[in-house]
Amino acid sequence: MTVRTCLPWPDKRLRTKADEVPEITDEVRAIWDDMIDTMEAMPGVGLAAPQIGVMLRLAVVDGSAERGRAVRLANPEILHSSIELREHEEASPNLPGVSATIKRPRAVTVKFLNEHGMLDRRDFVGIDATSVQHQIDHLNGRMYFDRLSKVKRDMLLRKARKQT
Image 1: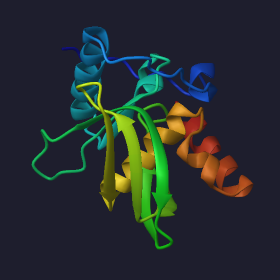
Image 2: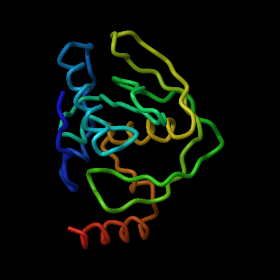
Image 3: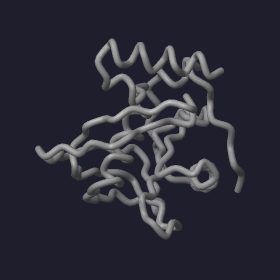
């Protein structure tokens, strides 16, 4: 298990849709293990494989207070989103030093392949719902700031450039 380096924005891989995972192998499990180590080292509540340069539809999410409860997801897909929205301050290790308040559905139902290669379906609520949606955005080549208005997005990116 290893802590991986997160790609710096604006690496083009962060804007590229990740490839489907055909099956869960030991290699996929090893990537998930590295992703969890990387997420814990940040510390964060989720990580998508493209953030570390692995262009596969893999994500991990752990919004628990006690940690060690990461959900491993391959090919996650949102089946249902709540109408009720939740605001949360979001950030990314790919663009450190800046964050923004983003509104997303408070709860989502997601289908995915789990670590055993079985099709799973799970409801995520609160911080876990925010994180899984954030990770799916990464898998689709989107960043959290893409959900901001153009003015707010430009201000955030200008602020980030000043910090480097």
